[in-house]
Image 1 (cartoon, each protein chain N blue to C red):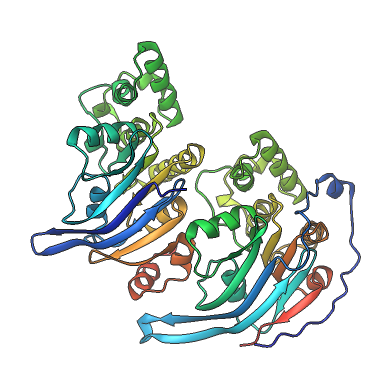
Image 2 (image 1 turned 60 degrees about the horizontal axis):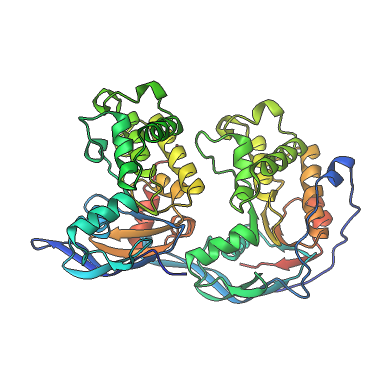
Amino acid sequence: MKPLLSAKGLTRRFGARVACRDVDFDLWPGEVLGIVGESGSGKTTLLNCLAGRLTPELGSVTYDSAAYGTVDVHDLSEARRRLLSRTEWGFVNQDAREGLRMGVSAGANIGERLMAVGARHYGDIRRTASDWLDRVEIERDRLDDRPTAYSGGMRQRLQIARNLVSEPRLVFMDEPTGGLDVSVQARILDLLRSLVDSLHLSAVLVTHDLGVARLLTHRLMVMQGGAVVEDGLTDQVLDDPQHAYTQMLVASILPV
Amino acid sequence: MMNTTSSLSSGPRASSALMSALEARGPKEHDGPVLKVAGLTKSFVVHAHGDLALPVLRDVALAVSPGECLALVGPSGAGKSTLLRSLYGNYRADTGSIRVHHDNAWTELVGAEPRTVLDVRRRTMGFVSQFLRVIPRVATVDVVAEPLLRLDADPAEARDRAEFLLALLNIPQRLWPLPPATFSGGEQQRVNIARSLIVDYPILLLDEPTASLDAGNRDRVVELISQRRDAGSALVGIFHDLGVRELLANRVFEVSP
């Protein structure tokens, strides 16, 4: 078995500030990797470098593509990388408005992804889109509404449907439940958890919420000041933190 | 760390029609130990307190074979839970070796990749704790069935087995479709036991599995666990209740502070 995604020596600066420094890891098929740390620790920069949205100054990201074999994500042409990100990847943004096309219907948002992987039959696309609305607990009769008419939680679920309908092999998620009410958050966590299991997804999830990390991830990387200070099995990192920074993070969780 | 081995009577084993209906699919036969620990050392370093180091385990060695139940004994704070959690890979050992018989080969867990530990946990080594980590919105029956579904079991079969265990552990049927978040402590503990026992793990680690149960439920749990032992699982557990320890353990391992 080969890693699905490998990062080697990834470094990215913004001016004089180092956003991520010398990050190395392998993501194996079926694994959900969490990247945790406080705001400004470099989590989102790392995620964007992994997904090819941001170019690192040093280091490389290789991906084991179903269509093209092993590719260097940052060596691909822009067109090829866009195709890859529509067909084999998903990217769930914290702000659903960035991940959805707000000017077209929910059905079109889902259908667009299906067409990217070759679906052409209008009736089939519509049926699949409608099935996915159901799967993410949005009423089917909202298929023709635009996401502008949806609540924040519904938009997030629609964004998840849009990303997962094409059964991607790898999903990047940036704070997918950030900024949502706790009841809405629970619903989305439950949804992601069951989809990850049933579709055997591999994923990289950025979150500052250790509860979310505990629920959704198999392993964790803890980032501080752009560097990975600790990594390991999720329950091990949270129950037996080794690094001073991780110990501080874990000790800061409010009990309910 | 002292390793005293003594014999405990395994006690009479009650059986019922209900119990025998639970198909006891024992692990494959294997001669000799399936879990071997050597030179295991574990300390905690608390960075917020001037890097205070708390040594807990020093040079622990033990081995457990199929059909055996090893009871960890010792005063509170001696490191029994730390040892059990280290065996499961929940705590990270400093040095030493924890080897499990997995897929007909020995797998080293100290320093292993997360995916290796997870694979051992999925198929070979289970952990029964006192507390259920509640998953929001997931129905009790699905919480229990999940470990079996992760082994690609038939969903209907997994559900049947989950319902059977829930009935056996006296969880009222009207509660099965509800998430266990609002259940009593004892009910949550029994849901957790059902979840931990739905897969026939060749190695089972038990941390006070009967801690807050009433006598009737305690007996059910003891019966279920002894059935696993007799079917060939290797067990390591912490049992403060002396009656429970007498019924389950064949050997004791003294953990000293």
